Length: 516
Image (cartoon, rainbow, N blue to C red):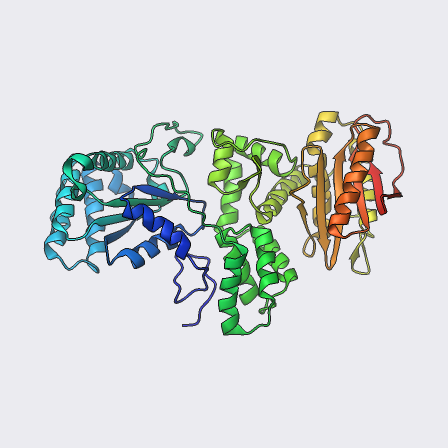
């Protein structure tokens, strides 16, 4: 069977190109060896199911590993404690048959007639004492059940049995229980629905912290690409491609594999940096469950949508603390990360997707006011950035001259991104330089074909700050190895809004200045 890059379901090293998961598995194995109960809570398509499969593959010799999944469980299983106990017994029996030769132990579940959690607890103890190995139970897709009180009662029963191990012995219950899902079961208040009551108390507070880094690092991506290259012999620069993929994904497992899959299967194995950018643009257009979830989460949670707007578009400075519900939610979905103690978007793919979400939303609601349909943005296939920023300035003066300062301060950057998007759509890409962004300044890196443009969007704060803005831009141009840049200043004082766009020389760099 020919290997491929996999983006659906669990990964199998015999079928799929994978990064080496040994270090991650060692950390999980250590928790299980210590008899811990814990949750692998990570964002969608982050390798949770693959890790559960590895537990079954690697530990079945020392433990009796029973892999369960609550995905697709019929709603009738939650009709009563008796129905839930019957469902759990059926799953235990069905998943034991291929691996457990002890017929007596299997019969315990086959003959289970528990009608309450207390009776189910008794069956679990009987079973664990009957088998010869410590029992490890893994349950995938627990998110599907977190809103159901019966499931919470079940977790509460497991918690009580865990706490009784000191008195009744380790064999009185499962040696280790591993749940997998997006939501941290220890903190159920994050499972928020507008029409539902918030739950602040978790029956899973005995769970150990799961601090395993499951992102893919550049050297791991290179190892995976090396395995692929040994089979395909494309002649790619493995180091350069792996670093480019990491640059855009920050190691998000699904995004790494999806980019590789697109290049392999849709781009005729053209492994070049430009192909990575093309793959990113395909991903952010939607169609994958990950992008669908991003859109749904923004739509379902208005406060969270506003929070992500301020983070992604306006570069607002928020301290990274999981005590804040919005920060915690963004972290849970892996849309944000901790960058030097401050909140930042997790990766450039999500950043581009967020820009697309907000700009399309704005353009639909304001199609008559902002449009980039004027000509001459492209000259001989190259982007004319001078004309782009000049035309944007003209449009702002025509349509938004009477707008209030708070509106422009909040919406100015979004307006520019909305204006720029259709001009570069299909070929170009833009992202915010993370090291320079703050709520007063944003360096936008725009790529189009083989060219790169640096555009600084800055809020006017006086002559002294104007010079500082030029200094900052010229310094950043030097870092990027560029001789020219573009400075777009939103001047709320209206003292300079009639100034004509012009090129100036500053610290050995050419800067095209536009004041709005």
